[in-house]
Image (cartoon, rainbow, N blue to C red; front, side, top):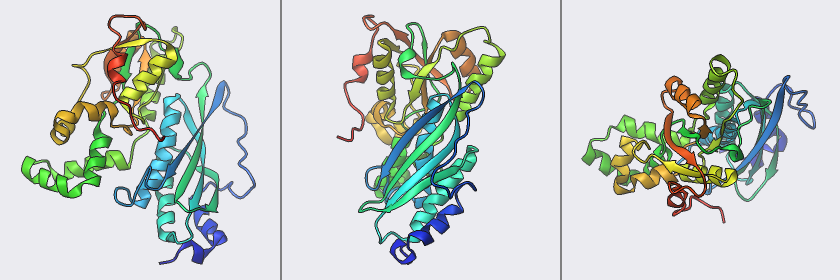
Length: 332
């Protein structure tokens, strides 16, 4: 197998350039002026071998897709459209060229899906395979979605189901266990594979943001922009708790409305609710907005569900402590 040591840095860069914007080659990317009445938002994320991905669970193309998607999801969570991304890679000298080229293929596939491109990066030797991605996006002024603006009386909305990424990861980590389980339970192999894709290829919810903006433009023009929220990459419970803490509010969850996917019930048993609340890496959006807007939103976006209401911190219905009983994944 050809390794990056055999190929050398310039040979590696020659391969990478086919996945980059045509402007790549200068010392920096020229961003130009943002769109009229827009502002720029920036996010960054790192993926480390055996922390965020492994050869046991994620193909190199899926590693590349995830590296792009987790950053794009942060842009969607702010209400922004992507402008471009940069990716720096740290590689052991023994890394196979085929592996890192496949990473770039998956990264490029994701970027093309969301009409954006790779505009720069860096390549260095490292003892651990590392990807560091920075994404730039643009959002209309006064339509920036942030965590600290939730209001008492807002509806709490999620853009889709949770627990599916956790289910996919568990299947990938324990293939023999779930092979036996599938045979006993009658769970379809095609369904199992589709569940694994929730973990391997997350989908940034730009469709939800586009729908939200469409509703605001067409039916609610007179109202000020009053949407707050974030994505659920670190878990649904974590997202709700972070919004509440940042906005100094509480939450009254409708536990009956909180969806638990049937496959999660089947795979997790009595742990199903934990997978939904604390599993993480579902990359849905958790949004707070007036009920008038929320009802329009869930009509237009079939996957969206109202799961509760924002309350005051001192309300007797404040259930925030129930969500904070467990913590989600922490690096330290």
